Amino acid sequence: MNDVYSVSPKVVAVGQDANIVVTGLRSRAFIPGEIYNVQVSSMTNHPDHTQFKTIALPPKDKSLVSEPSRGGVIEFKQSFATKGEYSIFVTRNDESATYVTAERIYAAAPELSRLRPYKGDLHIHTYYSDGRMSPIYMAVTGRKLGLDFAAITDHGRYWPSLEAIEMAKKIDLDLLLFPGEEVSFPEGHIISICAAACVSGLRKNEDAYKNELREIAETCLQDTVMVENLEKDQYAPAKWTVDKIHALGGYAFLAHPHWISRNRYHLNLPIFEQLLEDDDIDGLEVIGGYPPWDLESNLLTITKYYTEVGKGRKIPILGNSDTHFRSTVDIYGWYWTTVFAESLCKKDIFDAILNLKSVACERPNDERLVACGPFDLVEYTCFLEREFFPLHDRICKMEGELYMDILMGKEVSLDQLDKLKKSLADLYSASWQ
Image (cartoon, rainbow, N blue to C red):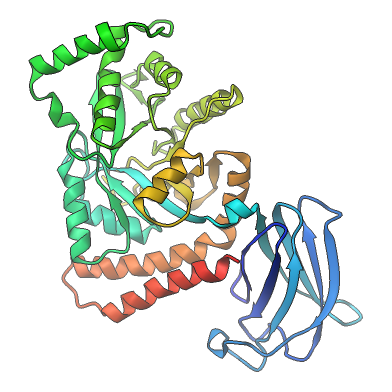
C-alpha cells in the first residue's frame, strides 16, 4: 500500500470475474491516453500469470487526485483462479519498460470473501478495579486505536461495562461495546462476555456457593474422568463459573493460561487441560497482553493451541490486551482479535469467533506482527494488515480524537464525525468485490 496509487477492490472471490481499478493519486501517476503494460501474477501459484497492455483512462472521481490531468486510472477485468495474494505489476510501454507501481490484491474463497474483518479487544480494565482510567475513556481510546468492538472486563465487577455502554450511547460512539467482567476462581480467571448479570455477585452467599460447589463435585462431575493431578473439588469452581456464565446467556473465555504470578502459573494447568477435555469454554485467550519482555507466556499458549489443533480439537481463539492503562506507554492497542464476520453486530461477531473465524494478533511497540490461527486466516490477516487496516485505523484514529474532544467538553462538528463514519463505510465497500 502506498500514497501514490490505490487499487480496488482489494479482496476478490476466487473463480469470479472482478473489475480491477488501479488509480493514480499524484502527479507521478498514470497519464490518461498512454499505454501501460500490466502483469497479474499469483504469489503462490507461479503458472497463474497473465500479461497485457492497456490504455490509462481519465480519473472517474477527480476529487481523489491532486492533479486530475495526470492522475488517470487503469481498469481491467480479471478472474482469479488461485487462493491467496496476487501482484499487479505495471510498467510504461517504452523501450526500458519503466517501472510504475506494484499493487497487491487478495483472492479469497467465496465463503470467506463474503465476510468482513473487524478488530476487537475483549479484556479491558478501568479504575473500578485495578485499572487507571474510566470505562468511557477506555472505550474511546479503543476506537482511537482502531478497534471496532470491545468489552470492559473489570475484576468481579459487571456494572462498569454497562456504564461504558450507556456513556457511549450518549456520545454516539462508533464502537460496538459488550457487557463483561473478569471472573476469578481459585487458581484461574475466566472472561465473561455478554452475560445478563454479574457472575461474581452470585457468590455473595458463601454457604450457598459452597453447597453448589459440593453438588458439582459429587453430582455433575460424578462420571467425569479427571485429568492427571486434578481432583473434582479442585475443578468445581471453574466448572461453576463457566456454567453460571452460560446460564446467564454469556460466553466464557479462558484468560492468560500461562501468565506467571508469584513464581508460578496463575492458572492451575490441570484445570486448563480439563476445560479443554470437557469442551466447556467458548474460547481461549491465546495471545494476552503480557509485558513485551515476557515472550514466554504467549509463546507457550500459542504452541499449546497448535498442539491441540493438531490432535483435531477445535478451539475458538482471542487476542486481548488485558490493559490497565497504568502509564502513558501502555499495551493497549498492541494485542487484539481480528474477526471475520457477516457484519458488525453481536450475533455475527460471536458466531464468527465460535466458528473459528478469528485470528489472535499482537504488535508490541508497533514493531512486528504476530498472528495466531488457521493458516488461511493468518495469511489473509497479514495481507489486510499491510493493505487495508492502515487506512481503517487512520479513520478510526481521527474519529477517536473527535470523541476524546467530546469527553473533554470541546465543541465538535457532528458533520465531521458523520463524514468519517461514511469514509469508513466507503472504504469497506470499495475494498471488497
